[in-house]
Length: 281
Image: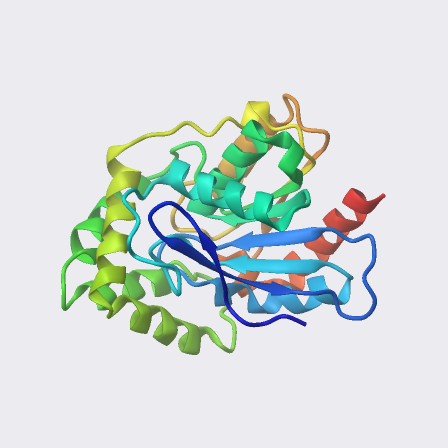
């Protein structure tokens, strides 16, 4: 099992990632790439990684540019930049993958699936920002104005981060929040975070869901405060994907906010394993 941090060289910085090989003998299960949302760390997938490996999957987790253990030297921060990083990572891995993105990474993952279908074996979108519904733009704008300022930026974000976890919380939640806050105490990471947040407000890159052909699973927390109507967001995403995707499944996760993979792994993991079984069939 490879657990050490590896780095993918990009033109102006490096993306940090880890590769966890399958538990037991390798199988025909796919490589799964997990990409977190804005202001988060790859460790948020801790309750998902183990079951995926136990199923025979090779699991790759990556920090966003300017986040966690990735570099803060990048020149651009937006959805398309994240998509380019994911595309480069998949190319580096050398095999088509199951690509899972959360929040802003979900939009980036969908861009990769639409533009480079040969790289994406299947797609999983968790709490995706795809339709511009709700008051999310206003909320992100408020966060952005604070996130780039010390010394209050790290505390401001982690307070908001906590508010997004409506419903159940993992027993490691407080530990993870402390790790997120510690990562943002580094001034360079705080500035990078602010640049990404600003880009999400000032630039709009449509996510081409209608062009995705890969089998796709969409997950939304039923209590997600980032959306006025999470169920409607889910229905819209599923409807758009049905234009070309080989198959589409949507799941509204009860007692979960914006982070269903961390809040309700008891619901999300079975859905992921069923999706992987479909991909392998």
